[in-house]
Image (cartoon, one colour):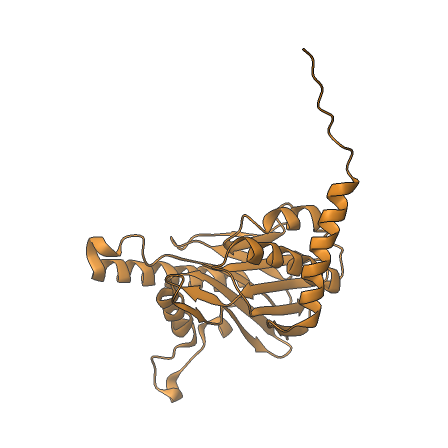
Length: 248
């Protein structure tokens, strides 16, 4: 399983993903799910992936054109004139990759090769944009009504984001909010796990404003995790008590 979140702020974009993949409790591996490409002063694009690992890796490889000879490689993400067209191309590649894998595997392949992606970035002269791409290749774009997208194991961390999000918040507060959301998910689902990859894309920066890998010995994440647990218990005990009455 996976958990990835992409968030739009007035200041730019914040992305976080876990790195755990597994096919059972005794077969757990770590793979990067957050990828980035940039052209200084011109564009910054990031992609997060959830779903079948072979499918997502095939799509990323095709975007980078790794099947060609080195002299002929041409990164598709660096050619699109708008983020909308970049999202369209990624959606097309995702749909084609899934259809090909399912066709090769016949009935046994149905439902096994699906994947979902979050695409974020900015191209010079345009605003930062955030998209969620479905296995069918279609996609939706974030707005101020829907300012963040989640893929993978979304249900445990979503209430945190809904209650805490503010479009005007600082990058630092957004990172703290995401860490609480991820901590809640890690506590509830063993198929989501550390390390976590963090990427901040400042508006008009066209480069990574901040990036960090949160490992098991990360002191700040440990403080967030223990502090959030203590704060929840304190908030619970501060609520008025329920009084049972015997009306008989």
